[in-house]
Length: 250
Image (cartoon, rainbow, N blue to C red; front, side, top):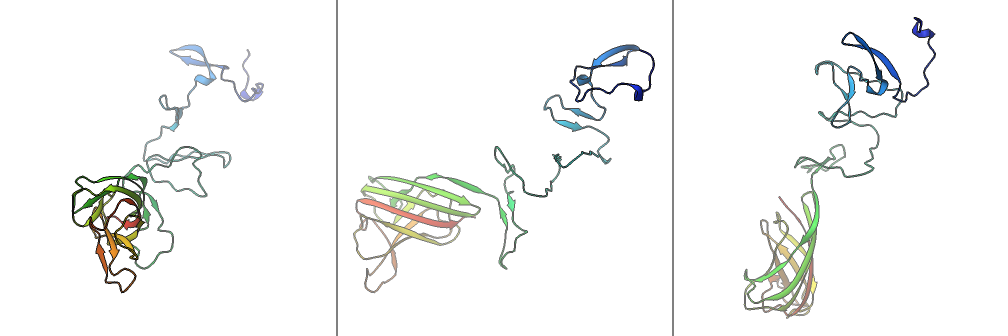
C-alpha cells in the first residue's frame, strides 16, 4: 500500500466489529492487533469487575468525562452524590449500609418541638406473648402469637392469648416477651372473653422501661368507676384475649 494521508483513506464501516486489525510497533517489530484488544491510556475496563474506570491523572487533578447527550449517568463511589430528578430502583433494594443512617426529611417543614427528621429504621416480624401471674406461670396452659412493626422509634404490636388453665401462680397479670422495651407510659386496647367481671372497660399498659404489659380493668363496673386495677388470676377465666399497643423505644 502506498503512503497516503489519513484523509485520503476510505472510511471504515461503523461500528467496528472488533475483528479489524491495526499495525503496531512492539519490541522494534511491526505486528497486528485486533481493535477490540486495544486499551486507551486513561480509560479502560477493570479486569475483575468489568466496570469502566478513569485511572488517571493523579487524584488531585480534575478529571473530565464528556458525553454526547443526557442518556448517560456517572456516579462517584467515594463521595456523597447529588441527583436531580426522580430516581428509580428497577430491581433489588435500596440498602442502608451503616446503622443510624436512613432517609433525611429535613427539607420538609416541621413543628417547633422537632428533635429528628431522620427515618433510620423499619422492621416487622413476630413475637410470642407470655402471660404471667406475679411474674410466673407455673402450670399455666395457653397458646399465643403476635406481630409487630417498628417505624423509627415507634413500635406497633398486636397479640392474642388463649388460656385454657391458669395454673398455680398468683399475683398481678402481665404479658411478657415484647420485641422492644418501652420508653414512655402507654395504654392500648384489650378485649376478649374469659373474665370474672362484667360491664367493666379493659385496657393494657406499661411504664417506661418495662419489657412487659400490665393487664388492667376498670373498678366499679358500669356504675361509678373507681379507677383502674391490675388483673390477677381471679379475674382470668379460660378464653381468648386480644390486644394492641403503640409505644416508643429509646
